[in-house]
Length: 601
Image (tube, rainbow, N blue to C red):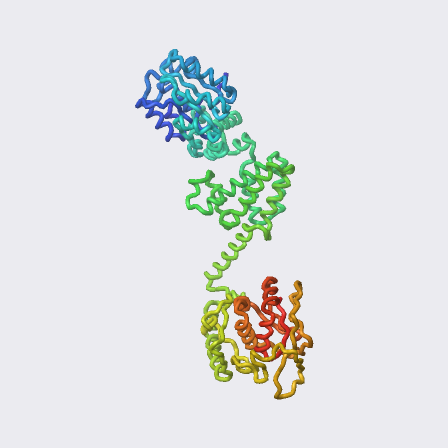
C-alpha cells in the first residue's frame, strides 16, 4: 500500500526536524544530560512538528543506545515505538477522549510501572479539547506524577488551557517554518523521490502552506501525481489557484483608476470559481508585499517572491504613495470582515474595489492623507526646479522674483508710514487700553506692529483726536443722563445735551432687543470708524469691567441707526442686555456724543 509522503518523510530524530532548532537542541541536551521534566507542553500552529517531536522524545528517553540525545532508531524499543507495538507509549486524542472518566482511567493506568520501556509516556494531542472537569482530574497527577511517567501535551490553542495546567509543564513554542526552509526541504524530498521541482514552484508551495511543513509535503505529493516536473503553473493548478498574474493585473488597474478593468477581472475570477473572500485575502497579502517593497531596503527578508515578481512589485510600489497603500490595505481588511456576514460577497468585493479607485472619498481620513501626500510630492518637485508656492496669493513664482518683490514692498510700506505719521498725528490718552486678539489687556500696548511685515493702521483723518474728555455739550457722569427731559435733534446751540429717558428696560428673552427709547433719535447718519469703536469699547470697559474679555473679540457695526455688537454667543448676549444695559448705554453715549440704540447678537 502506498504511504503518503508526509508520513514517509516524518523526521525520526531531532536532527531531521526542520525550522525548530531552538526546541530540538534543548530537548536533545535534556535527554543527553538526563535532565528530563515530568511534563512538557508543545504549542504552535498546525504542521510545525509538535507531534513529531513528541514521538521523537518518547523514543529518545527509552532508547537503548541514544546518540547525542537522539534515538538510534535501530534498537528494539525504537523500532517497536515506530511500529506501535510498545504499549508503554500511549498517544491519546483529547478531541475524542475528553471526559473526566477518560482522565481517571489514564491516571489509574499511570500508577503501573512500564512493561518494557524505561518510561511510560503519554502524548495527549489537542489537549485544549479536554473539559474543565477532566483538567481538574489531571492536575494532581500532572504536578506529582510517578517517577516513571512523562506527560507530553500538544495543542494549537494554548490560550484555552487553564493556567494551572500551563504552570505545571515545561513549555515549548513551535514557530511557523520559514518559506525558505520549507522550499529547501521540498527540493530534497522531490530529488529523493526521483522527481524535479523548480525553485519558483517550491517557494509557491511554501507560501501556500503558511509555515506548515506537513501541508507543504501533502501539496507536493499531489503535484508529483500530476506531472514529473513540478513548475509554478503545476502547483497553481493543483492548489486550485490561478497563479499570481491576476493580482498584478488588478494592482495595475487600481493604480490607473480603471474600474472597468477591475470589475471585468473580478467577473472572470468569479466565473472561475475563485471565492470573493479568498480574492480579498490574497489582495491584502499582495499589497502587504507592495508595502514591504516600498518601505524596506531588503524586502526579500520579509516576503516570498521570485525575481520577476520582485521587479513587478517594485514598479507598483513606485507608482503608489505610502498613504495610498495604507488606505488600500485598510479598505480590503474591512471588506474581509464584512464578507463573513454578508449575504452577497461579490457585491462587497465590487464595492471595495470601486471605493479604492474613488478619487474623492471625503469621509475617509486615509483618502485625505493620500491626497495630501500627492500635493506634498508635487510641491517637492516644484522646489527642486527652483519654484515655490506663495500661500497668500496661491500663485507660483520663481524664488528670486519673490525676494525682489518683497524687498520693494517693504520699502514702500516704510515710506507710506513716514508720510502718514507727518500728515495725521494719532493721539491716545495714557489710560486707554487696547486688547489683543485673545481679548486680554496687554499693558496698554496691544499687539505690536512688525515693521518688516505690515504697515501700521492708517490714520482716520475725518475723526477728531480722541481724549478722555466728553464733548462740550455732553453732560457729566453725575448729570441728567436718565432725567425725564426729552431731547431732539433741534437742541438750541449752547444748551446742555440731554438724552431721552430710558424706561425700566424690559428685555425680550429671545431677540436680545436693544433698550427701548421713548423717542429715539435719528442716528442713521452715524459712521462707525475704528477710532469710534475703540472709544466705545474703552468706555464700556470702564463702566463694565466684566465685559472687557468679551469685547476683545467682538465687532461693531451701525445698522439703521442702531449699534450692533457682534459677540456670537447667546449666553453673553443675555448677560450683557440684562445685567449691564444701563452702563452700556451710558458708555456708548459718552463715547459717541449721541444717544444710540445698542443691540447684541
